[in-house]
Image 1 (tube, rainbow, N blue to C red):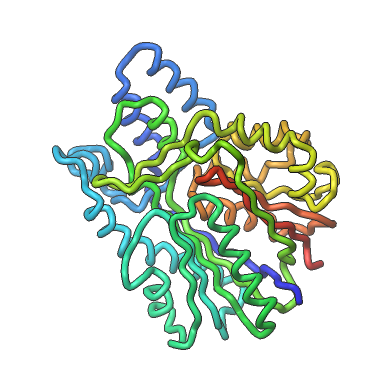
Image 2 (cartoon, one colour):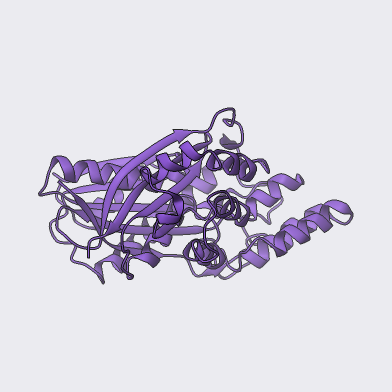
Length: 352
């Protein structure tokens, strides 16, 4: 029994905060060598826009913004925003999906989000807003980080393979802009430079069409557990993204056995399409160099990074959305990295 991803809808908020957040971070560093390094890294990050659910009417770092007040916002204040803004953005992505494919007969709902918590869960809120039957089976995938889209699509594939009549709605929604941290640390500021908000929704079923979801894979890179971390604090979720991550990924992918495990035994050059999570320009560069990929092999990932930044679990969905309209003549590989340091993905091919 095969599972097919038929379409993906996407949504981002209307407030581009990338230049605002860069100016805020740059001001915290003052002058000197660290500020000059930040300027160089920001200029070469490959990001033109990052979108936020925070009010379009004001600068989030200004006097009237969430981060401009005398008292830095606590986690409760951030989660209060998440509780209403995350479902709203997710529903926009679902609406976009509904413009591409029928959403009648949804039997399962799989939701991934790592940037907030609310109960009743965001899966229940979405199901209620969509008027899904109470019998709809729900799965909520939380706090897995950037590779959670893989877990969500893998779960949908397992559901369809065990229940051929299933129609699975997969949703990812991340509000990374709610977790700006009050810090003067250069590495932390560079990590925060990457992240933005976004949501995606996909339909997976056993009906032929779109792209076929193939064999998933998962591994954890040794001696790397501390390189990517999400820590829940009294002032939001603090992201730690070590500068060692691209080098560690490059070293892993340079291992021929590791690379063949990802591709299913094919040389990387034989893979027709690469959907790589756009975690940052240096990560995409590391993947491209280590696998000796053609210059344009990661063009979809780079375009998503430029237009949206790193949207955690939603990023890979945006990359796949760009690919769905084009035929993939043979093998495709989806790959994402996250806390652990985990590398997860799946193989796919055009149903055509």
